[in-house]
Length: 421
Image (cartoon, rainbow, N blue to C red; front, top):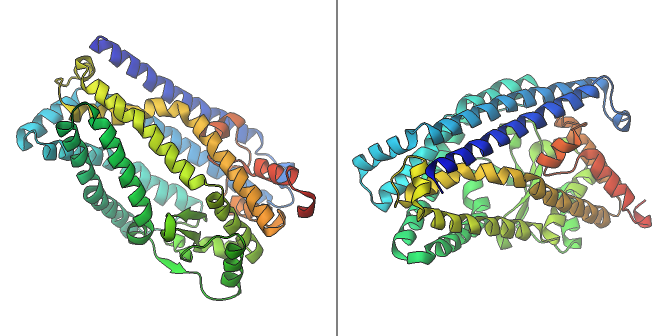
């Protein structure tokens, strides 16, 4: 392949991705506006006109900001890939630090850091202007900056040694280095999932056991009935940063735990909280956590193989202005280009995720013997979070990892056994 050919292919992929994203945003905006005049009949009894109007405004504001963010990201990637700034910076960096694996890893980390920092202005705007405007922001400037400082330190402590290890494997293990590198990454990710709930997540949020009382007793009994034993049911101070609410399952083995946002506990009734807990237990009982990990690891294996192949292809490095024969630029280029391909797999990945949500919903309804509390919880969460109640089907199909509210309600009621009605 000629070096110019790879540039043409990348330009086409970048333009196609950006154009598709912009079209999806526009058709979703038009679809939302077409239903903006009145509360959709399905929600008329649970959503006030004022709340619905606010959710429409919030959806459109987020979409406009997303269009700006997508355009900025596409322009930035084009500049980084095609302007020659990367090989220029690599040459300067290599002259200053040498060509050891330590220096190579430092170059990769530094580029990642720079690309992260340039996104901060839009992230700041989203947090302190858009979210503030709609009453969701609860963060302070000090908390925002501290979060990013902690993230950078964690990236240096965890990511930098991993990069060094990968480069050392490549320099010492011959043709199959990529397989060993993938195995090390797999072990790293699994260990990280084990320790994150204990050592990493508490660096950003406070986790406390759900206080003793009727609610805690009821939720623990529910877990015992399901045969699910976690360390505890934890409450996270999500209100420290945002008034959005959520619940999630984290950790593996004896480190696993259910986490409820403090805002969630404030918004839902005990029976609704029990149904949310049952849904999270359903993800565990159906093996969704393990399946997701396996899917992620399986997806990274061909990427490592591709890196190994392209590291030997002189035309690939030359196409972007690098001298051939060095793995470091190839690793960087593949990490930058991966999104241009993985984007087109988003519908399949999200379809799979939505199936997991349906399965967890059905499990929850059977565990609590009724689907009514879960539907009530979903409606409240959609209302409190100002979720888009009328997304365009193409948009939700491409982007949504969870089914829409109407889809979840329909699945719950249509598949319910007689004893749940």
